[in-house]
Length: 401
Ligand SMILES: Cc1cc2nc3c(=O)[nH]c(=O)nc-3n(C[C@H](O)[C@H](O)[C@H](O)COP(=O)(O)OP(=O)(O)OC[C@H]3O[C@@H](n4cnc5c(N)ncnc54)[C@H](O)[C@@H]3O)c2cc1C
Image (tube, rainbow, N blue to C red; front, top):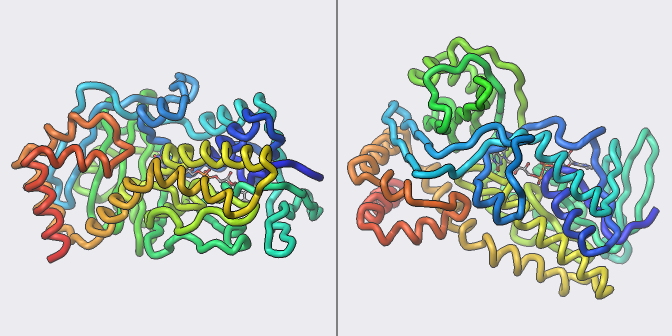
């Protein structure tokens, strides 16, 4: 079997890369270990509307489950901090339908999908990637290709095979997500975020209401068992239990989120890494879809150019890394820095930070932020406001103390 470009994984980043390759008129084949796209789903699907717009993705009622203009943050002791924007900024999507939609568009553009096909390793000749070895129904098969785009997600099994350094496991958190019914006292046009080391050390817990009366909830934790943490959050947390205490959990899933910022190198001879496998995920919020898709589009275009120019060398493929770092590199560096500072704060210090932010009315400045993806640039913009400078100074000194 032969294909110009092989993509590993039919997640959003795999399909979006394949779409960019196919649209350039280059043959691309996607290999997915599961029997269909989008399952099992492990993601809450909270996306920024600006991000979707930037990527040329129309928000459709087929997959958008709700739209939000507010975000309410709860400190470990229960102090509320509400950011109310004048217009809708984010949405929650059904990830199964969203992923299937991306795969449909890629297929219609010419990409070919192979399901139940688990990529076992890379085919290499004299150190150069020349394709993949995959398993389908107990049969091991080979596919020769000029470029392999690795979009296998956080597992990073194939990435190691390419000789690239995998993601920073020190900042990997264990996440659990669930859908619940009978949610009370949650505003329909706002998401809720809860901080506290007891149930979400190294991250936070969330409640994302849907229009049908159910909600997506979840959390991530560095050290503890996520299932026990969710149980605590739903049944014992002094605020969340009032909202979720009567809810039935309709489905649970577990997965890791990489928060350490992008890996140091995302290309090799005949090889590109994109999405979670390259840790192209916001270290502050764990949001990986819009960031990953931004990089996936670049990867697909670069792979197609390489095929057309018959140059699959590292030297050429380096332009993938240059381009994606130009788009998101600065913001990623700032977000890694903020994540590390946040992780150093105790619950007591986070409580104090909430009080300082409320006293300085930081929510008024935050309410004017229109793009929640590029948080480095947002910070730069916000420091024109003296209150933000004061709050940030307080934040940095608390974390560094
Ligand atoms: C609990 C949780 C909540 C989240 N919430 C949000 C959110 O609200 N907003 C947001 O933006 N992000 C969120 N994320 C992050 C988001 O899910 C990921 O960043 C995103 O799915 C990354 O896409 P991807 O295509 O790189 O990888 P994935 O979506 O993981 O897709 C990888 C695909 O590759 C396949 N695969 C893996 N190995 C192989 C192999 N060897 N051979 C063939 N196929 C293979 C897998 O089956 C899968 O289909 C969340 C993550 C978690 C864990």
